[in-house]
Amino acid sequence: MSEDLVKKPALLESCGICSVRLIGILLNLEFTVPTYFVPLRIANSLPPRTEMREHLFWLRNDVFNARDKIISSFESGSQLDVIHIDFSKAFDSIDFGNLLKRLHGISFHVNLIDWLLSYVIEHSVYFNDAVSHAFTSISGVPQGSNLGSLLFYSLTIFLVFGKWISECFLFPGDLKFSSICSDLDSVLLQRYLDSLCKWCTDNRLHLTIEKCSVLSYTRKTQPLNHVYKINNLVSSHSNTVTDLGIIFDTKLDFPQLIHTMVWKTYRRLGILKRRTREFPSELSLKALYCARVRSKLEYCSIIWDPNYRNKIEIERL
Image (cartoon, rainbow, N blue to C red):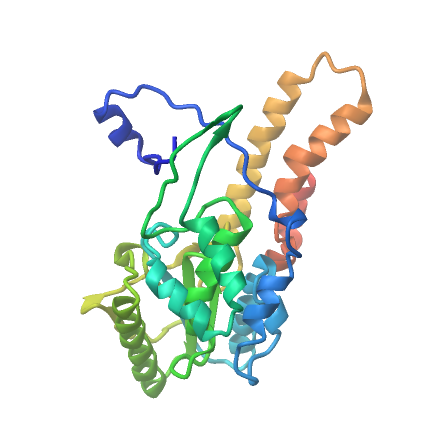
């Protein structure tokens, strides 16, 4: 069946569908084209002033670079305002016409563009000797695939290195940009927001304004609270924000992240103990512990880097 599957359970229930089990095989593009080819082709089209272009597509660098910038603002005694932007149904709402125009704009070869379009436009399902009719949609990119993220990047990548944004970080579906806080910088940051809204309108992408927030990183007792607007709506200030699984706070101490992580890890450890009482092999127990418990504790630990008190709490696990 070559149709978009409904994601929201409430809509499924309204259609009389009680449960859905999805079974599918995605094409592993690692064995059909080099995984570095498309990212480098996009990165090489960026302006020369960009730094670390080849690392743009990696999750860890996005968070790590943001953390370094926050620490630099602490060391200089200034305040850093970071605005977190959330695209509404980013992968589902990409217009193929704009996508094709963008690919031509960064000098993709015609044959490569045709191959990419055949991947996202015409879908057929093969089962034994039967072949379904080709399904064609006018928007959206395949989710859960390598090319899905790359196609989204090809449309939004110039947000990062455009002329009107000086410092921002992009990960599929999420964008954040920042500026050292002063009266002049807050005006410039508002201009960036206005330009972003115009760009989204021109490219038929929408923002989830209720999920957009402002976080002011500072060690000052009385931080400056500037008002930022997105589509003439005031963006809310927050004390914490979850960015790619990491809970950031205004002082970069990560207390809520560590508390939540330890609580969830204790739950995993308890389930693991109850389920493996009959396991005779220590190697099996160690493998399960490393996969289910330790992996949770080590996720992006270089980012949140616990202090001595938190280390004791974590090492108990």
